[in-house]
Amino acid sequence: MIIDLRSDTVTLPSPAMREAMYRAEVGDDVYGEDPTINRLQELAAERTGKEAALFVPTGTMGNTVSVLAHAGRGEAVIVGDQSHIYRYEVGGASTLGGSPMYVIPTDENGMLDLHKIETGISDGSDEHSAPTALLCIENTHNRCGGMVLDLEQLEALTSLAHTHNVKVHMDGARIFNAATALGVPVSSVAQKVDSMMFCLSKGLSAPVGSMVVGSREFIYKAHRMRKLLGGGMRQAGVIAAAGIVALEQMVERLAEDHEHCKATRPWAG
Ligand SMILES: Cc1ncc(COP(=O)(O)O)c(C=O)c1O
Image: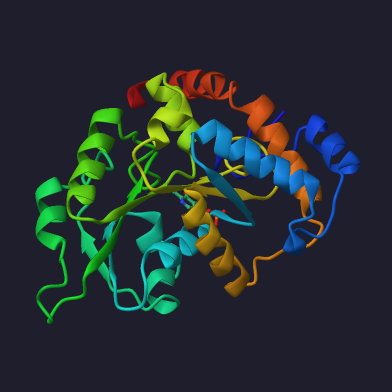
């Protein structure tokens, strides 16, 4: 047997997922009538401790709708130079949203320098600079080898941003890996951020799908942005069904993945 370790995205749906997809009750989700999508969204909101959630086809779309919902045209977004949002998402915030990206260095642990964030924030009182609307952080950090931001670092980042009336979006593509590594519920990791995207298709084995979570007001705006990007899907409960299995059955298994990873890469800790 070959175990393919190129990425946690090359997983295949489990038999329980295929069964759930086969049996999924569906409806038109653009009308809000797909019971399986509605159930997945409620589950995602409940697990992350947020008011509401939105199903999106990809992590990239989840991050993009979040940035567009938080930052209007001409409002700046602070990102790390190693972040997925900055490096691998085709500059969506700027290309689609008209938001300049203010880029600061990411350290080797995936953390952003608090002083550099603070000096990068503009309150808009100077007409030369774009007012800052959003800080984006990433946890776990892909390009930093899966490093985890802990609760103290998250507290420092969010309280700094909030002091300046700047919202925080977390790219939590692999947030369940972060929560597992920290030994805390995912709701604790998500608690202080205003919005978060996480993927069902990374490590959790679902074939497709990501979730955006946040306040009801934020999700209302994100929903509109999803429509703008062509992400309003119809009987997509067929894929959401696998996402429900991912959340209900696959999260606990991540501890086992971490053990396997440590066994094959003992230097990684
Ligand atoms: C940290 C991070 N964010 C976002 C994404 C984007 O997810 P997708 O490939 O579903 O668009 C990825 C994909 O690998 C990722 O690693």
